[in-house]
Image (cartoon, rainbow, N blue to C red; front, side, top):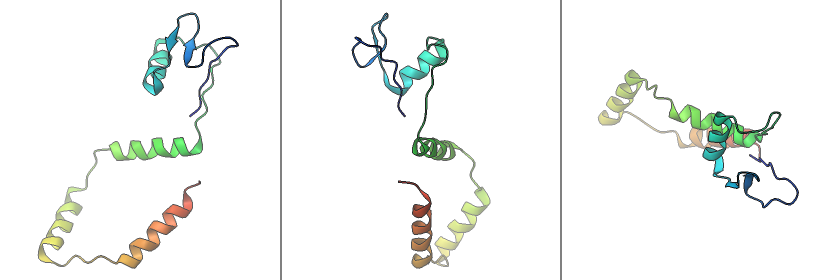
Length: 102
């Protein structure tokens, strides 16, 4: 993510030269946006990778767990009936990696 609001003659790292407030990273920027201190028409562009990372973070933070599936897999592991196909996992990892842009 690249955000800049620098004006000629102002020090880098300042969001608003009149206030002299230093940038506080994404959290500080979010506070400024919520407080309405960003100027009208301010534009923030997120890279495709940043958007993917945010989506992954959102998915990871979901608390939905399929309890029945967990219990079934746990039972199979406990009984020694769960087998792992390493070739299939490796193929899937490579396929997923190929979908992610560099």
